[in-house]
Length: 394
Ligand SMILES: Cc1ncc(COP(=O)(O)O)c(C=O)c1O
Image (cartoon, rainbow, N blue to C red; front, side, top):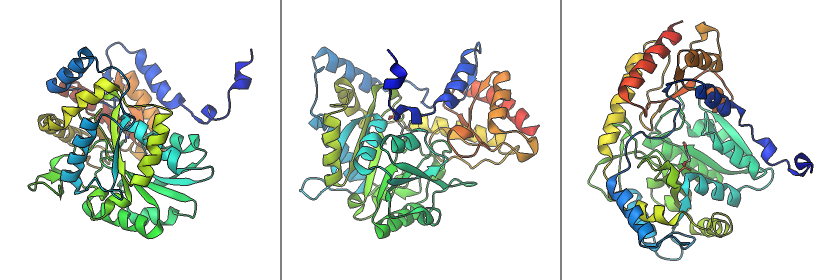
């Protein structure tokens, strides 16, 4: 049978060769210094493991409600009330939905918002999934060029808004840059979206990894502990902002496929309908495990990552341009123009020296920077950075 003839155009719009190439080249190395990985390297908190294992043993292995187990939804709502000041309960209030990873939440949001020819504005550089989600929906991701400081400001976004725009997507702390938006940038973006009548989607998957210099806001119901700024923390934001958060990165359980989304009830109700006929529900035992998550303290790991961030800045900041990451576990250094090579070429040279990083062209229209992840053992990180510093110095 001619299977090629049967496959429609949809998957053909997706080009995976860039990342696959890095992985294929990396697979040939014996014991590479791997600075390409997008997940934390610490152990999963014991209480989460215990509760998930108990859930399996106690027979909690069937479907859950589409929206998620009530216990976790309640816990998530309490978190959002304390952190963002959102109130849940009455008919007009926002709604929270437990999803299969943050990706699940994003897919449902795109499916509910974007029809053929419609647009969503995303930052460039961006998380690799965003443009593909838009094209899978028949829509278009309009890239907002945020070089050289990687700040998605209202001034940069406004000229891109057209009558086809349905949403603006911001991501702070950002992948691949680690840049954290300021409170003022969040407020201006929200004001712009309100003025133009488009939804603001805030992908906050890395909010748990915000370093001292990024923690410039305070939670609404808290005692003044520093927080990562969020557009969802402004008065009335639950009517205009869709907040997407995850458990995978924060607690080292990326394979559990757990996330949540909260925002305008009318939209979440539509998203839940699509979840019912696609994912059905998030994995049951992982939902129980994540019930223990929000009470686990990962601040020790975050301080650890902050020290590794400092190492990256001190070893690479003097040989190239580097926006200091205030969150996540990525840095996005520039390949100095004087080297006369693209980021792909530089990453190939790094592979020859046993170091794996990802060229910026995979996350961007430009191939002038590269992403390194510092979620790796400090001794390995230091070795990798020495190689990179040498390559960047020419
Ligand atoms: C910015 C961003 N959003 C969403 C995701 C998807 O995360 P999840 O594993 O929860 O689906 C990632 C994963 O790397 C990411 O970097």
